[in-house]
Length: 274
Image 1: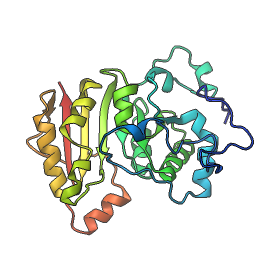
Image 2: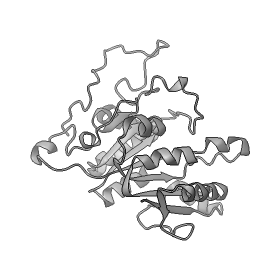
Image 3: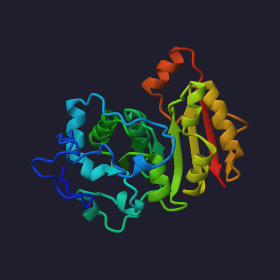
C-alpha cells in the first residue's frame, strides 16, 4: 500500500530521544504527551495515558500507518475535510478528485477498536475520528482498519477535551459516541467521569444540528448520571423516554459480554442536537 507523510512533522532522526534521554517506543508514532502544555492545565483528568503491552502486529501497524491515519491531539486547529480526504496518504485521492469528505463522528474511548472497525465497515460514508490514549488499542484499530480496507477511520491520540476545545470548529461534527467510559465507581472519583455538564456543553457546541449523541455504560449509577446530565442540556433532545433500546448498529464487544456475564445491565442513551 502506497503511503506518504500526512502531516508536516519531519521524519525522525536515527537516534531520536525523549526529554529523559530515552528512545521512544514509536519515534514517528503516537506521542507520549501530544499536548505539550496539558500538564499545566488545572483540570481534572478523566483518563490516564497507558502504553501497555504492544503486540508485534500492533507495533507494525503504528510504525507504518500512524503518519497516514493517526493524529496527535496537540491543540492545533484541525481541518476535518483534509483529515478525511479520500485516499489521504495514498493513491486513491488521485482516482476520485472532487469527492466530498464524509460527515464525521467523534468516538471517545474505543478500547481495542473492534466495535469501531465494525461500525466503520457497516457505514463507509461516515468518517470516524476515534480517540483514545491506549497504545495497544491504537495499534489494533489501525491494524483492523488496514486489514478491512477501511478508508473512513482516523485514530486520535490524546485528550478529547483539547480536541473539542482547541481543534474542532463549531458545528463540525455529525455525532458523538462514548461507549463504556471509565465509571470511576468510588464516590471521591465521580468528578473524574467524562459525562459532566461542562463537558457536554463543550461537546454540543461542536455538533451540527441533527447530530446524535450516543452513550452506553454497564454501570448503573453512571447511567443515571448520564441521563440526568444529557437531559439537562437544552441543546439536546432525548429520542426516547429515558434510556434507549440497544441499537443494532452498536456491535457487542468483549468488554460488554464480560459485563453481561457478571449480571451488569447495559444502558444506551440517544440524544439529538437540536
